[in-house]
Image (cartoon, rainbow, N blue to C red; front, side):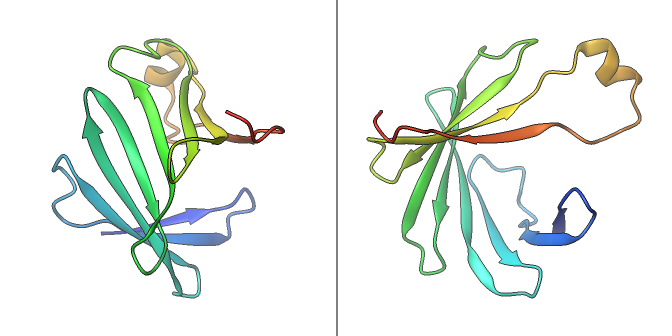
Length: 125
């Protein structure tokens, strides 16, 4: 399955090739530019009740790690995903999925979620 990621103006900026076995615990997505150039992969893993991702370059080497909230964290609140260096020693930034509220989510026909990526000003952990 091919998913397209668009910017706020509606232009396609990334393509994600999702494997058919996307319901498994470990999923590997292929990421390419809008022109088709392979940028790398995203590998999803569940470890100790925490969802995490490895960001790989085109050759398969880990460039970044993304650590999601633990089991039960973020219930009815924003979800924060830490962007870490490949060796997990430095936090580079955070991705926040904003909680819009249960009623708003149920009553809205929109499938858009608000995502923000905030780079850290200081590179120290």
